[in-house]
Image 1 (tube, protein in one colour):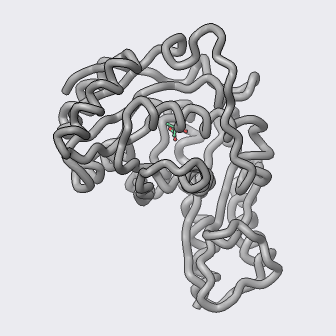
Image 2: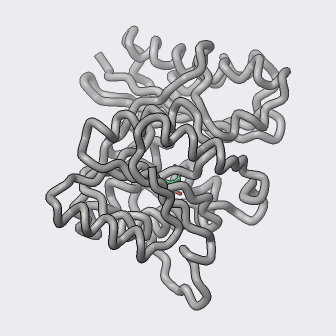
Length: 284
Ligand code: PAF
């Protein structure tokens, strides 16, 4: 596995592979790899010839009071893990390389960004859309893989790709969970042992919502209440939002239709740690 830190070098390498007729698959990440990331990398191998993982903790998608500085980082370990699953290139630029002096452009996606993460984390999706655009231009992929855990992000990225005519297929890979159901996240390391023991209740709450849908509950507010009620039992969650929405257009109807694909989105604070998760269900 080769480590690349310069945009120009990455572009030359990608161009060379494209000229050779090889298909490039990009896995954008912020590092501190866990099984969820490794799963994306393994999936990537099935979609092309060359796997490029990007590792960049992107400052522009963090708010001023968020965890950019303390976001977990361990480059040595990340290098070893990526290499162990057969990644070809690890593109790990510095902040100065990605945002040099005089940098003055921002990519703004206006669909799907006016709710949930877009409201709770103002500017977050501008940062994501901007860096994803730059990472795509640096790595020139044919395919890019994103995790379902950041569900809203996957919709924003698909919209970006469509609107800006990127010739890139976006693949969304399922959430990888700990044995007790907690969605894997680099931020799980922030949890205290006590917080960790209840963190899987997010998963249990989502399951209850999905179960209700499968049992015929179509009223959005009722589905939300079932999830909220479960979380409230534990007295430890501060609920940022819980919402069942149409998984394709993000609309929030009073009552879902039969056959409608729904995603239940959850964002909670457990102590100081903000966790997000989601689960899909089709209305019978
Ligand atoms: O999902 C992430 O890790 C980040 O938002 C991404 C897509 C790598 C952009 O920084």
